[in-house]
Structure formats: C-alpha cells, structure tokens
Image: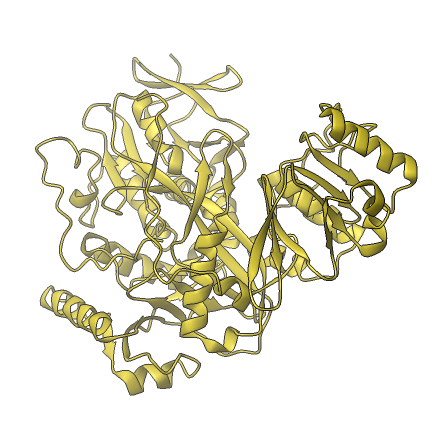
Length: 387
Length: 194
C-alpha cells in the first residue's frame, strides 16, 4: 500500500508529542493519532514533578539527561513548560526512613551518581521550615523542580506541529495490520493510514496496541489521585516527598498546595473515566497534615485522577519490538514519565530512525517479562510507596 | 428505602410534610462536598462522614453534585423529565424552591419507582470550551457558587468527566478519617485482547 506518512505515533500525550517533535525535527513525515484530545489522560492530570530524586536505578541516566533538557526547554520549544527549578526533598520521619535513605545514597554513590544528597535533621528543617517536628532528616536533589503538565503538553504539540508533524484528534486506533513495506492502521472511523514505522505511545492503552501487533507485556493501569487546597501564604518552595508512605507535596505560585504521590482511585479504560476513592484521599490528607501542620485550617478545593499505565516493576517500556518490525513501544511510565518525556521522545525517535539510543535502555525492554528473562528489581530503587 | 433531600433550608422545607421519614440535609448546616452512587459525603466541624441514600432529591444550585452522580448534564445543569427525575433512576433535581405539585409528582414517582424519561440535549458547538488544567479548575471551584461558575465547570465535565469536589472540604476533617498506611491498591489489568 502507499505510505501516507513515514511515522505514525499512536497517542497524543506528552510521550507521543515529544516523539513527534524529535522525529519531525529529524526530517520524518510524522502523523500523531490521538483517540481523544492531546493530554487528555495521564499527561493532563500529572502532578508535574521534574524529579531525578529516588529514581529506579535504570532510570537515573535518563532522568539526569532529561533534567538538562528541562533547563533547555525554552531553546527547544520556545516555552519553558512552566518549569520551576525548586529542588525535591524526600523526608525521613523516623530512623527506619533515615536508614533507607542512607542505604539509597550508598548504592547511588557506589555507582558514581552524586545528585542525591543526605540531609540531617537540622539541615532538612532549615530547608523546610514548615515541616513537622518529628522529621529526622532527608534526601535532596537541588536541581529538580516541577512544571505545568498541560502547558508542557501544549508546548510539545506546538513545536511538533511547527516541525511538520500532523496531529489528528478524535482518531482512535481500531486495528493494526502488517502490510508490504510497513503497517496499515485502521482508525475507529473506518479510515486507514499507512506508514513503515509506528510508535506505541498509547499510555494506559499501550497493551491494547501492543497486542494488535503480536506483542504483549504486563502493562496495567491505575487512577492516580491528587488534590489542590485553597491558597495559603507561601511556606514551601520545594517539592516534598515522604519516604515510608505515599506523599508528594508542593505549593505553587498562587499559594495552592498540591497533594499527591500515589493514592489510587479506580480507572475505567473503556470510558476513560476515573472514580475517586475518598478513604485513600483521606489517608493522603492525613500524611500531608502530619508532615505539614500549617495545613490544619485549609480547605481542599479540587481532587482528580488521571489514568496512568503501570508496569509491575514500575519502570517503563522503551524499545523496539522483537517480533514486529518497525514498531517501537514507549509506554508504561508508571506515574513518573512526565519528567522523562523530553528525553524519552528523543530516544523513541532515534529508535525509529534506526539509530541506537545513546542512553542505556536494556532494562526497559518490551521483552523483559518474557519467561526466562530475569525480572528482579535492581536494589536501591526506592520507589514511591504505593497508595 | 432511605430518602435524602438536599438543598438550602427554604428549598427543602416543602418536602418536610410529604417526606417525614426522609433525611433532610441543609446546605448550610451539613454541606454535601462529594457524591458517589448511593452515598453522599458531608462535613461536620471535626470530620467528614457519609449519608447513604436510595432516593435523592436535590434542590437548588447543585450541578456538580448531580454530575458526580453520573446524571446527564445539559448546558444549564442536570437534565430532568416531567417528574423532575434526572437520567439516574431515583435521583431528582429541582432548580429552586418547589411548589406543592412538584413535591407531589416526586412523591408519586418514588412511590411507583417510575423510570426516568430524560431526552438528551443536542451537543453544543465543538471546540467552544478550552480544557482547564487542575490548578485552573481549583481556582474556579474556589470562587463563590454561581450559575456562571457552574456553567464553566460543566464545560469541563463535558470534556473530562465529573469535577470534584462539589464544595470545599476542610483538609483536617478529611484527614480525621484517614488510615496511616492503607494497603496498596492493586494494579488494574486490561483484559481486552488477552
């Protein structure tokens, strides 16, 4: 069949749009097909953390390189995505938390990474004057920060379009078929699109796309919940995370405080809707209040959840299909793909262009759960406690 | 069968005599800040709690509450039939203080468990509403409740689904029912195509 375009990116979230941007910039004719609207799900509902702190070990090289791109975003996109370099701090509430932070630093130091710095009690309380008295220490990445998810998504959308990519909204994929010279994509309206290369950046729907080309990996999903309080006078500029329980916490310029970090509601892939779990939001509110007593009189205005793709080992799927030529998978970011997106789109673009990734991506292989492949999680990953 | 009537005091007053067994929730004394199928979340000074319902009558400005319950929404608020029943069976909506006839119609509909007959509005102009990110939604929710504010929020409901919360809730009151470390919620798995 004739090829309408040189690359079809399935999914108009941040990963897909970043891929489209880098691939179009490299000279490919790119079409993004998005079932709903750009940033409709995980990208639009992300907490927006730009974090190298506490990354799973295989993600660290990517997170550090992606962080450099965040600082360069105005040059790349003509927009900084609302990036605020603020530092991120993981708080130790007790001796067990502090032990785990020390163990983490021992592991990262031994591997030559020095971006995570231990803080003793006095140091963490100097950095976070509003933190609760029981806090005993912390771990900080001073170059980390946060950004505005929708602004970043729109910035990549504009930049990709400027580079020549075509973005089709309301274009869900109903089927994928191998044809001579590439792939034939059938859209839900019955129309077809052909290309030699496909990037699967369908987020929580990534497994459905993978199955269409004969691949499979255990990509699940969750509805990660967050809340915004009413505005308060400024009391914290950093992003704070807990160690032994799920919490991510920041105050934005308007004074509103975002509370997230892992509490889960219920997601429905067929409707694209989520249901909040108030009892888990309550646990999150409790953690926030115990760590920051300044919240005692504030009201919560808004709570929401985005549907995130989750892998059992909580690291993404990035790599070429070993069965389906021309297919690259880029999904399963497990709730922390936002910060990586400026780089991971570039890696996906490199892979479709036939180049090798300059960053180590073997750990993210789509085949890593194939029986016989070692699936042990590397030690010292320090994942966010689940909620 | 638990019947709950929600709204401003003068709005729910006409139901007192006709529904003496119902639970009457005054918006000023026990504000509903979130709603789920078959239960409402209310706030007292110290902590939040739930009020179960099998039948619900909502009086007054309550578009977000009805949206949270999955009622079909029009541009001006919840769609209802001639019996004031929304698209969700057993959930009724009245935009203002009801007259005697309206109360009676609702009573008859509940007594006979009549199904709703709500007709969908034709879709509005595509692309008229811009997606707001969560902070912007929070800022709108922080404004006083007006028809214009709710119309803006209903535009977001049409784009991304129900907006929470219906009303501000005190963080400390919510935290009061929170477990210290709830068991992790499992990863959901997609069975389609398996």
